[in-house]
Image 1 (cartoon, helix red, strand yellow):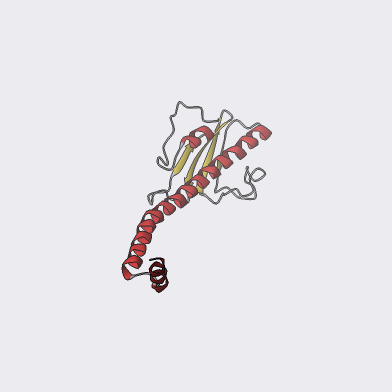
Image 2 (cartoon, rainbow, N blue to C red):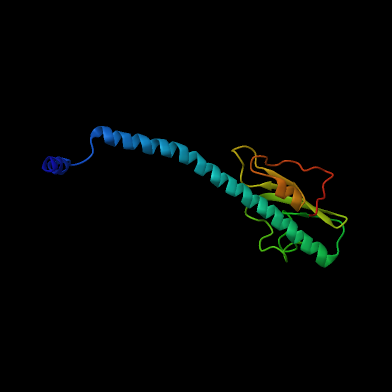
Length: 155
């Protein structure tokens, strides 16, 4: 009996067509599940990068406020790079993730209105409005949500 089993195992040379088709179907199912998930991960990471850029601009503005003592001002991404008020605080006054931004300083508190370069969920590019705490509350699933006007914009 052992000799017959060894002989049978020796005679097997590869996969049958049915086994090969089963493997291909399983790989297809795995690919169908994985590909959309990977695309969603990439979109979320681009959204998070744009959100981080908006927060970086606000942090630079807070440094500008602290060093200059300014109480009221407006800073735009379209301002001249040579005379841009945030040039000393940012490596690049137009971060890669933002299409444009306007920072408004009121009573020494900075808020931003920014438009991302990277659209979320293949719709309009998300906007970031408010202070740092407002922007931190935004998620990929609720992009561009306008913050509560009663919240503290300068956290």
